Length: 407
Image 1 (cartoon, rainbow, N blue to C red):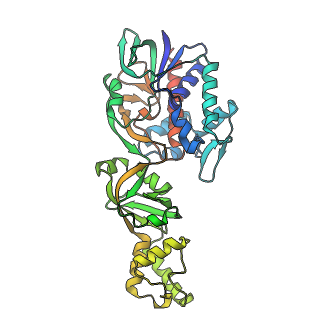
Image 2 (spheres, rainbow, N blue to C red):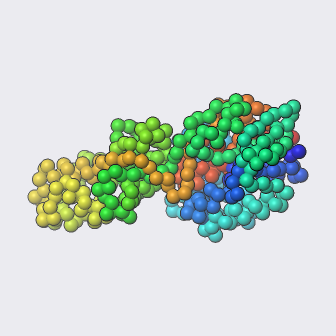
Image 3 (cartoon, helix red, strand yellow):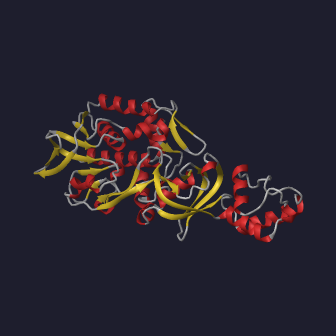
């Protein structure tokens, strides 16, 4: 008989288990992990450095980085947010550092530091761990849960914390659906765009720091660095856009037109005005060999080629037709996208347990008493940059607090 069984040996599961143990010394906890690997997402996050959280404080500011779950997360972050995460890890001897883009990593630059921290705390709190235990069904009998696993093993607990993470297949949620919970269809988030024409493929590796990407025919648009890859488009603007447009792009079967503005939020009028200046101030310079707007030379020259501007044409002699074409390609280069590529190894899904079935302040199921949720199993997902881990820590904390209060 356990006081708490945590289903899922990932970020939310471990954090929830450790928090519950710290709030309730002596509580008997078991973590069940279906694979043979613990904390696998923690290991690969941030290129193996573990992007623990983001340097973004205050529940309102933080919650704006979540395409799904923004409103409930305001309440959740009111109880536990980024400052609390930093303090908790510091209390365990793990200092975090901030990078220029706001991402926060352990000073060691290694995800193993976070993994070692969790394993050490689990051992200290006598939390039992069993790997290779895929849960197939949960039954509630009297005041306890019977947890059945694919291995044939059966476990009994007073309380359950479901922290199974996000999954591409709905079947992963069936044992929770069987208990009466609604499941929002899981679809991928955080991915890059595959360009069918590959007309920029020889420019792979080039990027602009202030670009913008829009999905044609929609309001979905994001600003930030844009990177040309051998398969299409990537970079923060694209990854962020994939999160906010995840459900729409899934409906489109990942076939759409992406419009890239290589000069960020500059408007056509602003660019036209700049061109007018160039004709006066640098009129005898060649357009082709004088890149503007901090655009890399080879990219500028490709845009000039698309605008049919030869390498001998000077600014003062640039015809109106070619001017218009260059402006068009600067602010709206079309990419015919067909398909996606997972961003590094950071597979994230939107979808999961319907938030209307969960008491947000306690993370307890409204359908089944003493069953709690934490992490990506919920219909909550964030942009890249540590936001998904932050949601895992915060929901894990709230679940643990409720589990401990009700003992």
